[in-house]
Length: 76
Image (cartoon, rainbow, N blue to C red; front, side, top):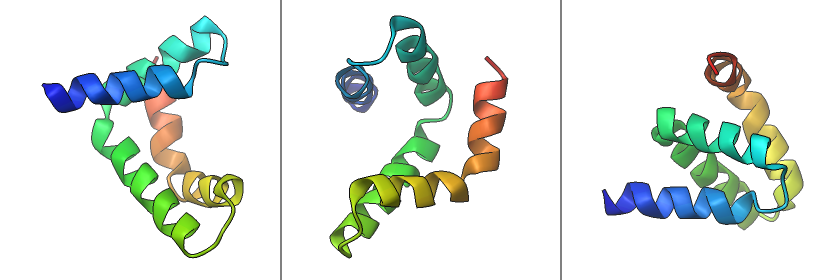
């Protein structure tokens, strides 16, 4: 329960510059499959520690999970 709250707060903070509609869409996706987003975050962090810039690390990991993300966002 605390973990879910912290995850919601992290999403809220990380999406503060996005339009409200996109914030809600992302928050719902994270609620539906939090383990996927934890896995993505972990892999991005690992690539960053290897010296890869955050943007490129995120793009690489998102490509890896593209099908899962498309399925998740397609359901909304």
